[in-house]
Image 1 (cartoon, helix red, strand yellow):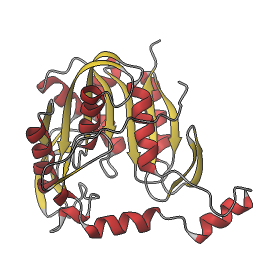
Image 2: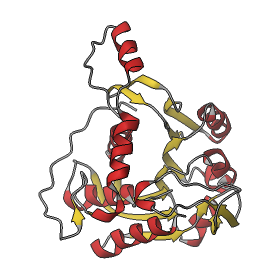
Image 3: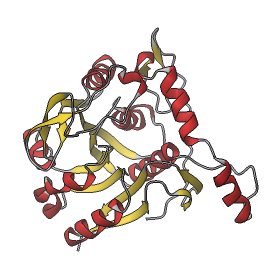
Length: 288
């Protein structure tokens, strides 16, 4: 697949009181991101002196404009959407605010970029209670064709411990862990596909804070049948990219882009980028 940098159209829509604009045309409630989170994100993604020295060493100059992980995911997302025709199904696992379901809706409903997509259906899974309610509200208030599901993704159905914090607007990194302070339902991908009657998943976006490999253990049927065409996965600990790649290759899935977490500056199809924390893995099903 040949990736290109895509410029999306500016959608000139005014949000109602208490909501804010986004790059994809639909709106988010202002309360979903605190000033503390905005400050933390800025600090986490700024170019450190070490990275600048590396850039100078590589002849890039002291004021290079490095892309961040959000831009990378956006570009992979838009490039993949341009390959689709007709109806598109999307799974968003670890939905947070439902950004990627909203983005697909924006592409389809507002002609954000040129595609041959005519309709869509989404499913968004989120385990943090407030984040789930915010995702649900984003969908319901704006008429988004998406199913919100409260719970976590796991290797088997059941219940699991999840760690939640008092101020969910300041943190989107909560996860399933043994010392979790709440109990939430957990589901496999195979179960969700069957329960909500998806015949295929054209694109699956994953941000589940460390359970990326375990997720695949609950997706055997989907992998065997090639039901998932593309996946964009945020990865959260070293060497997990290679572990996943080695596992899914037996099901005819190929990595079309891979960058480990804590990579620092990297080359991408869209230019130099910095990954100070999370990694990115993009997978594609190859018919054989």
